[in-house]
Image 1 (cartoon, rainbow, N blue to C red):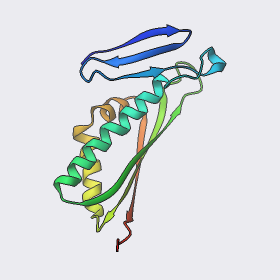
Image 2: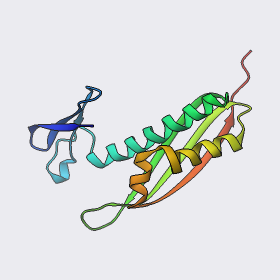
Image 3: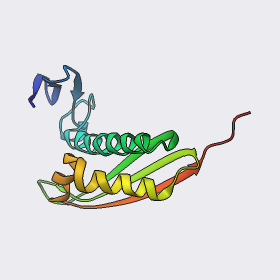
Image 4: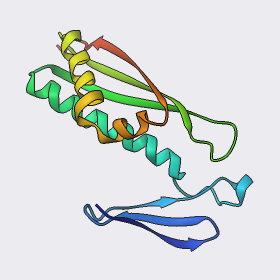
Length: 143
């Protein structure tokens, strides 16, 4: 897997990945000399973690034929006060909506993502404490 960033100006870059061919803007806050014109690099670590575990969980739940109608994964990272300001704690919140979703199935899917399938989570766990919460809501019955 290969990725690169191409400098535009100041602290503005375009990042791309060779495998997918997609690109995205990277930038920094004005207080550090940036133009506030793109993702912060550490934000992308959290987005990557959320995406990695979300794909695992929804894939497992679809195989279990759980009727998920909406799914969101929120990730919050707390950073050390001193440089290099690494993440010290990460919270992952799984928000599911559906019909008759089995909580045990969701918990097992999340556990498999944590312990077996999500490389982003395995790597970040070596640097930060990771905690999770799961919320399941019943989808409204459509007429």
